[in-house]
Length: 218
Image (tube, rainbow, N blue to C red; front, side, top):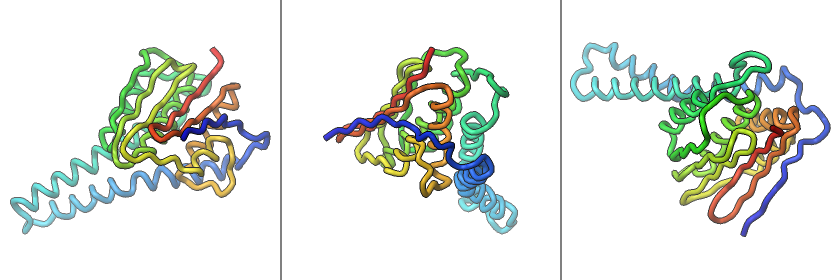
């Protein structure tokens, strides 16, 4: 069974900027709390002179893992949510690929990047980054996320043993801010970015894959 949906944002502007910034801040904090907590726990163990041998090495592993995850999440958030490059700027697709590669290194999904290098409109890149993270969430037990096409017309396909497509994610990508949560705020912002440049978002779900497609004018 498959279903394809065109995601057309409503005419209303949705939440105000202050509400969106608060929700997005909550999302970033939620993502970071676990790796930063792991860093803190590891450092507490290392500060204890009685901890030696295996405990010391386990604490070092905890610090390394926490640092890797925190850096990956912050690097991703800087590009996907931040004001990278300033207003109207372009973003390097190599930077986007690096941010996603590091992000997927701490997730169960495997990234397959098939888009050429170069500079691209900031809005397009941010939408790609948000959809790629959403695609990884669609395969919580592991799988593949393939990004292909070009930056003006790209497809992101998630496939794996267990496929999930959250209805609240679909609504947010369609611009519906009803009962919006911090987790789904990036999807709503992606919908607003696509609308602002006259693009179109589509999602298709089947038993084999979840496919996101974004089309922008050249």
